[in-house]
Image: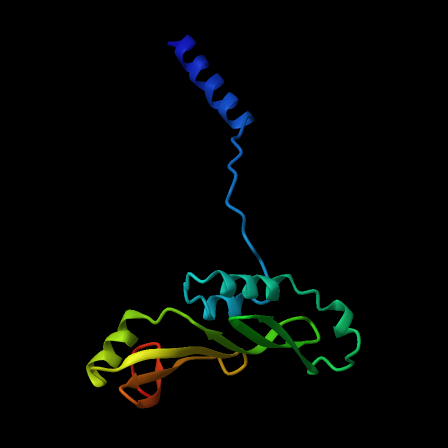
Length: 166
């Protein structure tokens, strides 16, 4: 009995002496996590991900030195042929607001369904996806501007991400 007790105690000490190392997935900690959480729209477009990555990798230190007051804001534009983000940063590099504009985005199913119900016989010829974000107002506005065509008439509609006309 004494040998069993000593074996168990030895095993406990050995396990505690050699802790296991667990590798966790890469975690991104950023001053702009509020923005990333707000605009996490899960679009599959590569250029949207590239623009968002450019914002995260942007080194604001050179420009921020030109500003004296903590409340000063400066704008930086990030552009690709099918998308653009204009970002307003404060002196510390925190995103205050953004205006995002993307062309040729795939429309959500709810948006397409609403358009098909209200405008049967119309085809979509062009679409623009707009996102407006403001950190201090805790605002995120998403809308689509869509051009519809039926025979010779062209109609432009605005609709939000939920499929409600604006």
